[in-house]
Image (cartoon, rainbow, N blue to C red):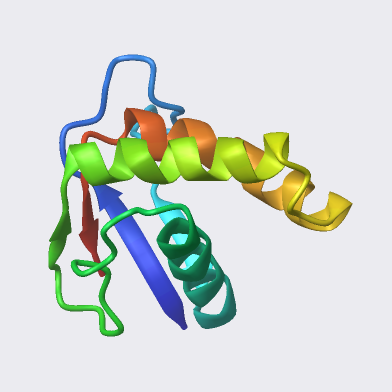
Length: 103
């Protein structure tokens, strides 16, 4: 269980799976809380981040801010090497999703 994030309006350069559809963001509950805390520490409005899988939307602007927050955390050496490894590919997902629905 965790949070699955369906891209709302993916950009043409959004990463795609084998079927050619945009890759969803997927986090277990620990990873989801980690993302929320990281974003909040970097001033992202996380009020729309849900603790339940209800389809609530996260705006494209907020998703861009999350990508920026992850990049800042990496650039500022806030993260462990393991966290850098698993979060780096997520920057592109957040940047190209066009907003997310939380399921």
